[in-house]
Length: 362
Image (cartoon, rainbow, N blue to C red; front, side):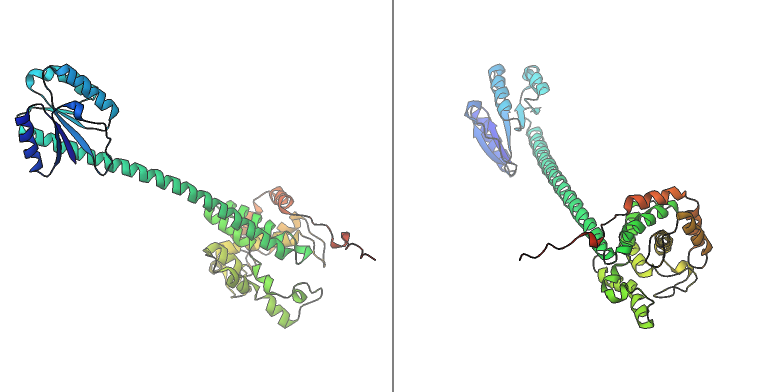
């Protein structure tokens, strides 16, 4: 740290210069305050002023006040005799002078210089920390904004992917969105409140049939009964779906629904024949949501059922196809809840025969 030493007394100035330089300080000596130019130091080369207060003190102190106003960060140590302390104290109170020590007390001068050096170091560290915090906050804000944008893109991509898959069969259009919402609400009814877990259950429900993208239309849309080989291909879609998206940082709840959504509580499901609590909770929740939508949706081989009939069917299969605890939570809810969800999530698309290609030009 550079010390600017101002003292009209040449002998004392030279003695202080020698004393401070021997202790490793860089010192610039001047006879008068007017020789000091305003030069706010950079953080890496800070400066302090060590000034002997002459008699009369008032003109010098007025000049010191002017210098401090122009160079607010400059620490000022005043060398003042006890007789002149009354004149100096108002300037200490004002903040023009940071410390006042006796000009003959070398130990006191050294202590004051070291204290101001340490204080300057702390101020530099504090400022560096403040700037780092400001930068980190700005980066965090930008990262949060980018994360939100990516999250929106991710959600839109998932929904568009499953909408496109649903549209392979007009009869099941909107199925994925509906069961995703059913699963979310049913999970909440079971006491699941963690937002991330609920969101992952919704995503898993949305993507549950992703594996059907690998099933040929000839099988997926076949109007008649499936042959044994065809049925075996259909039964592969949970594993195919899991394999399709497991590399996309698949979280547990999402993967469990995709892989286990056709398991049954009594162990007669597929692909692994899991039973009771061996079936992940989120997959057991989804099984009820999926059946609710299946019964209340139109199919080529039957008309849609009402929600009361769907509830009766689900209750009838508690303990075999479904977890009784989940059925109980489902049954306790008003049917209007499920009807409202269906109304909000179902999308109606025009029949394909409402469109026609433009006539060819002759």
